[in-house]
Amino acid sequence: MSMSVLSEDFESARKEMVEDQIKHRGIHDAAVLQALLKVPRHLFVEPEFLDRAYSDFALPIKEDQTISQPYIVALMTQSAMLQADDRVLEIGTGSAYQAAVLAEIVKQVYTIEIVESLARTADSKLKEMGYNNVTVRHGDGYQGWPEKSPFDAILITAAAPKIPQLLLDQLKVGGRMVLPLGRSGSPQDLMVLTKQEDGSLKERFITGVVFVPMTGEIRQ
Ligand code: SAH
Image 1 (tube, rainbow, N blue to C red):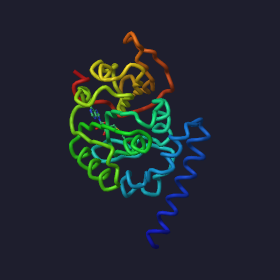
Image 2: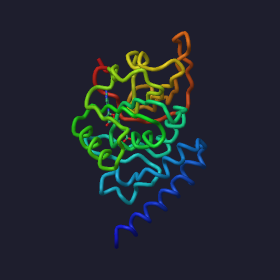
Image 3: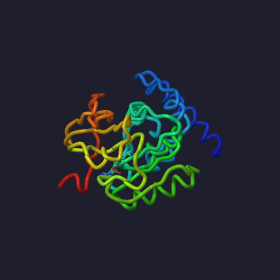
Image 4: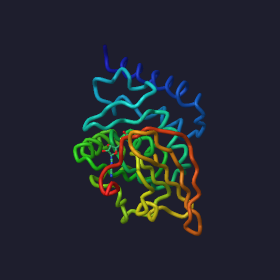
């Protein structure tokens, strides 16, 4: 089978994914749908899961981590209410799929991964794929990226036991933080926090989710 036949198969699987799993479940933001149609998720999964790259679930990646379910990536991205010239911080690069989706929509993406090998793989993969508007850093996302702050949006893609104040400090007024809040193991609350003029937060619960735990300093 030639590569072109394969990539056409992936493209139609991706269209089906967007129709059946994303649109039908209430994702309506045109830029988000466009990004999910475009990003080749099969290049972000492990080779043994290629046939499930466009199925409706999270999949294992290296280092006992996961690539999130496409619907949850779409939901978090839509919930961040992004604009084309936004600068976005992601905590938990993992496979880099969410980072690539963000990079299709906004001007600049900064993403931090605590596991060094994952950070390195993500960085070279994104470069190879031509995503020049994503910067990957290896480190603990708990500290954020103060030199690049403030951000229009911050996505945390690992379960946080509490709202990380240092990250809130790096959010613009009017900026949105999207995160799974709660203990690992049990479902967490996917929340959107919007920073108000007076520094207070407007909190909105979206749905229950299950993410791998945010590790590092937040656990101390
Ligand atoms: N956004 C990813 C999903 C990643 S799973 C994707 O699209 O594939 C969560 C990731 O968060 C894991 O790779 C894990 O190593 C990372 N992580 C956990 N705690 C972290 C922390 N404190 N700082 C940065 N990354 C963290």
